[in-house]
Length: 209
Image (tube, rainbow, N blue to C red; front, side, top):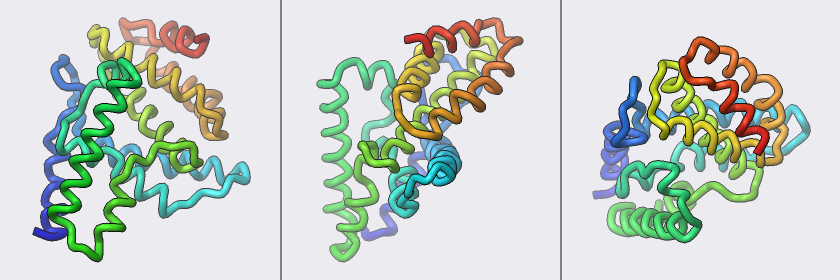
């Protein structure tokens, strides 16, 4: 019981493999994904600050480090499935949030419950920090899909992942998105020129939508 149960549960995130059921050259766990999202978010937030935007770093670290904790209870559901419809996405989020709330009620000491409810909440919203989380989360989706495409994985799932994440990112109005599109994405695409998959064409089509 107590916070020990929470600490112990974090190991489960190491065992949940992202994009289940598809052939992959490289597996990525939810724990690895969460760590990378934090790293992306730090740099994205620095870019925002360089452009005069105020960032609440405490909130940013809380929501990025815990944004997928609920997958301990429901596993990783593939993005195309999760976002098939707003109704389905809402239902999955409701189930995930309900199970996290139940876990807090059952295991977290009373004096810590408000903190855990704040930290383990859904962090993607219209705040600067929530939007940075959205970009960072989708950025890791791009990199995971890119690696598979670069290695010649012909599973359509990874083309869909790459395109949908890129389309989502370009719609977010942040300075760090402008920087990503102008400076980071071209470097990424140039590394994919030897891939049997035409990553440059997929990128152009996604950006044109």
